[in-house]
Amino acid sequence: MSEPKKCAATTEPHEHSSLVLKNLQVALLTKHYKAGLIAPALQSIGFDLISTDAFDTDTLGTFAGEVTRQLSPLDCARAKAKLAVSLTGLSIGLGSEGSFGGGPMPGLVNWDEELLLYLDGHSGQEIVAFAAGPVPLAVVASDDLGILQAHMTEQDLQQGWIFTPR
Image 1 (cartoon, rainbow, N blue to C red):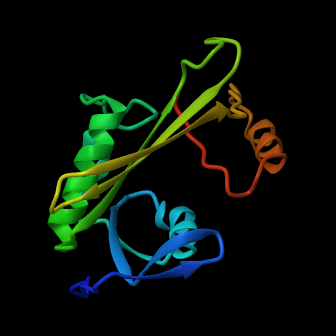
Image 2: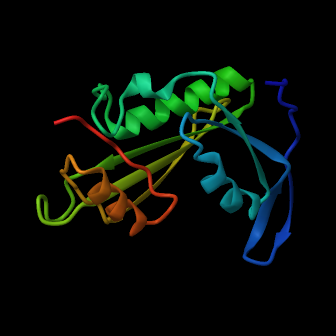
């Protein structure tokens, strides 16, 4: 990965707000291609997202449970933001962390909670965004490949899958 370039932030009026930052590079540490989901929103306010995968974030825990998360979701997002700053040399880092389960009706509704933490590496100030809501998840238990393929073709093509042996 090439060395990221540092840019000074400038401000100018924006149609949706009184102030927008321009050319501010923000580092995101991700193993799971989240930059493509986050970058468009940040570009709309003048941030340039720089993604790195120089650290295996799965070592902090996986949502499927292969590696147990030892930190709270907030502390995990904070750790990722700090690592993003450290690994890229940029002054602003983002950390993201998602969790499934819990919610207002545990056991009845599948629930997703997502955190995004913005860290100013110089001042230590943080901004935390939180989103939560129901998520369509399904469990299909079968040894029949045809049944699994039929179920998968009914789903969003960008949906990820977790396969576990019985």
